[in-house]
Length: 256
Ligand code: SF4
Image (tube, helix red, strand yellow):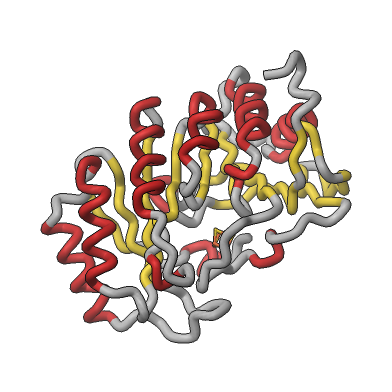
């Protein structure tokens, strides 16, 4: 890290304090930092506003709303994260770095994480997990990885399975907890799901597999038929994964 985290910058969309809507930390209050830009275009994406940065971003601090200029330094982002937390919050402070795709800015993640973790914060990284090189550059500052495993039908046919698996391997080797989320849409094939289970099988006893039936959004117009969901759940259980089926709870909770 540079001396004070004052060199590395990234464009942000927003920072706020809210409720985690996914994975093993579902329901926990924590800070969120949403990085701008994403190289992907998932069919179910509910944050297309994150694809491009504007000149300013908003921070819903505990004492009121702040407007900040982009791109922001890691040092300033860490200061702003501390300002999100309500004074009444007694639990370990956590910051979920999400996007867009945060791994576009690994040095920024590393520096924000280092600045906050020295004060006892825990860093969650919510990522598409398709860039192992970027993850290696910042993983020492990541306590929890939420990896969004993209089945090819949700991403124009591309297959990032090897990169997803390598990102899980890197995070587990560092000692981070790892959730692997798979959004299931009606067009996802059982063959592609089986291929994902096969790639993740070396970590079956060390990751939490979260199956998320799609909430119709963006290009996805229809929900996942329940028989298909149950069939995929059974396949994951048969492959010895610790698996949960969770809806997109942040939508039900009406939080960002
Ligand atoms: S990786 Fe995330 S932000 Fe990027 S297109 Fe997919 S769902 Fe949207």
